[in-house]
Image (cartoon, rainbow, N blue to C red; front, side, top):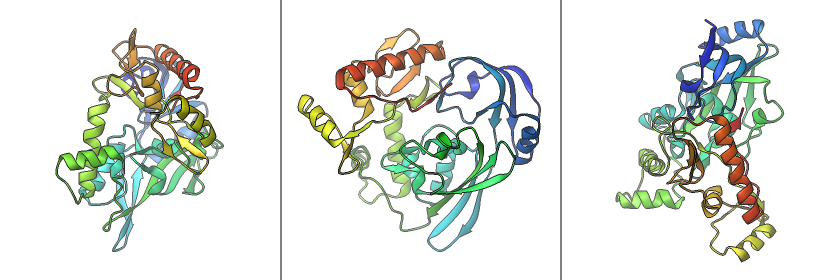
Amino acid sequence: MQIQQNISLQPYNTFGIDVNAKQFVSIESIEALRNLLEQEKDFFILGGGSNVLLTNNIDKLVVHIAFKGIEIVEQSDNDVIVKVAAGENWHQFVLWCIAHNFGGVENMSLIPGNVGTAPIQNIGAYGVELKDTCLTVEAVAIETGKTRTFTNAECAFGYRNSVFKNQLKGRYIITNVFFKLTKNKHQLNSSYGAIQAELKKNGIENPTIKNISDAVIAIRKSKLPDPADLGNSGSFFKNPVILASEFKKLQEKFPDVPHYKVSDTEIKVPAGWLVEQSGFKGKRIGNTGSHKNQALVLVNYGNATGKEVLALSKLIQKTVFDKFNIAIEAEVNII
């Protein structure tokens, strides 16, 4: 465990924002983490850097979680329980599942980031969320260094939300995530129109989990820029959920508004549509902008600062609210 001084975090965040960490250390084992916790209490945890916007230099120790390992811990004829270390890349884990014919996470292919940060955000895509397959989460308490296991219920998963973003924020470091996946009789979720269209285009009538994964990858690649080519953090804003009564008024004014029923009293409106209708899709302001193929993705054209991206996001939020009377929240963590 070697602590480095004055390190650029540009390689460690998918936005490619160039800010410095006063100190930096990469942690590759739980033992090393516990040793660190005995010495340090004031630090910033960094995982895959895919869901963060860095707006300032970090004047403290940055701890990069780099635990590795994927392990089958239990299985039956129909199901398998897999233990995945926090530092594993999420998409590589999904591909590992596909290769082993383990079903449940295929709809979340190509989501950037690491496994350890996935429960915090309760990542999701195309009708599937992490909570659907997450069995338990292991985490180390920052205060004591002791490991605690959280059940799915204790994680309090919600839409892009969990207990780790609320009551327990800053109190635990996730070290391993356990998933319960199917070995056969996979419950495929191809209900989203984009997946159906992609399968139809390829003449696939009885899709496998690999077919679903391939379809999702193709769709995401057509809409979302690769962070390696154009810095971004995926979807910058959450899809707002509004009351059905409010949606009725919105629909009267904008009859073509797309929507998804959440419950008898709540409706989800795509944030991407709101941003696009507000005139931001493909719009560039200085070194940042909204992507030409997906308005929900804010990008770094090469030299953007975190403050520039933040200013654009605030302008978008204000414009959307003024036009639709809907507040859209940032999905990324702004530091």
